[in-house]
Image (cartoon, rainbow over all chains, first blue to last red; front, top):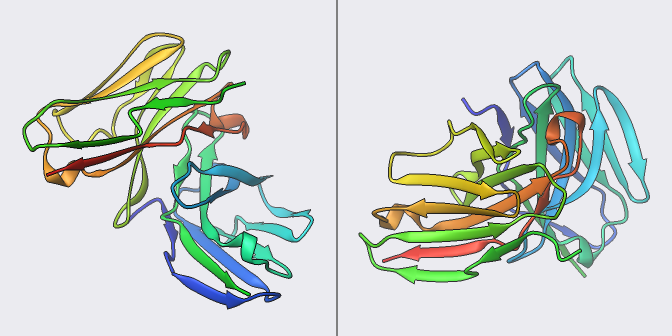
Length: 111
Length: 116
């Protein structure tokens, strides 16, 4: 079993839809939770970062972490065609320095 | 800042040949990571360095893969001999203080490797 599981999709939604992306994990030592966005033929870039449990909002994006269920989510409101990309969840422990990624979910927002 | 710089951007090579991928991290960063991305397996961590010292190479698939970081501004990932199943995008990334404190990891544009 992989440490981080993410449905690879692809996911296709109409413009303006609410998008929900999710990851589950097995390592209870993970404390830092991130979402990276990767456009086609580019490297991933950090989108949002959350420490431990709770919610974080940044414009149209909301990240949620439920450590009791080992489940994290990213919500995108009023999705736009420019949001079309692959979204990767990533996690790290307090010690060690490395970042473990989910497989990534490919999102397409149709005008 | 120029960001993480990788070379070559694209490489097509024949099975059995040696492949060397190069990376220049962001100046001042003390962590360097090598990742491999495929459709089937996603983004996998191969190895990472802290202050030029390899910390965890458990993700290196087999002895055909090796990585070095001779100084703070340069790293290589070598595959010898290469095989078709090594075809993937190889990303180099760097950060200040690593991911453990939630610090951002910055990725290069990737090296697209095809082994025929």
